Image 1 (spheres, helix red, strand yellow):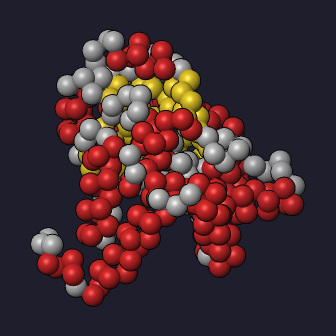
Image 2: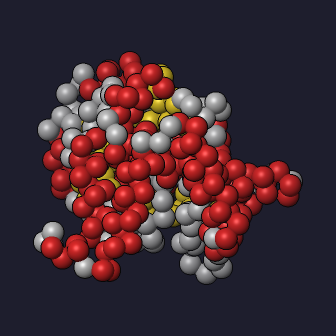
Length: 300
């Protein structure tokens, strides 16, 4: 699409959104947090459909919580994801070097050991609200490619892809399996997030927070095709709302096992353990349990 076509009035709201993201990326930290919290609270109050999805997810995932505690967690989830919007803007629009003093990295030795094998690596990312800022901070320590879902809006897709290409070595369409395998076999680390519902055909059902969830089979398939170590990566905003922690866990051993359900359950268990550290920072606004086993009623 030509640059001229992006001047069409239908893209004016997108230009406005991009402008606001660029502006918010340069706000003082306290103001940035205040803006993010306000966005989150407004969404919590008025985005009733997303609130229903979040309430449903948290009721399924944390049945042991009483209603008042779970209601606070719903609210905190919206606040964290509101902050995540300005964090994403910061990750996309600023040089991550200016945040080096705000990040601590644990488990770096695990990634060094993995890359020393010369087989590349498959990084298991997680859809925390800090996802894109986490990618920018990760680039300060390790280079990586990223698998992503193209945006339906062509202008925003161009903005997003250019931003991610600046942070990562290469942005790879999630449907480009050959591209992912090719990059890993060339010795690159590829960041990939397998924690969303990709539908029945691409998935097997495996436990996630005690609920059978459609879990993509591709993680084990890529590991089998490349023989690359699979590296769980955890990242979160610290309670001070000013600093961040990234942490590599050891590579998954004996993975894949050849059992698709067992492999999917193992990946889910790693992701679940990470989420339980800071559950409010996860993207519970997504219909994680949308696809159900045949004959089972939907949750949403």
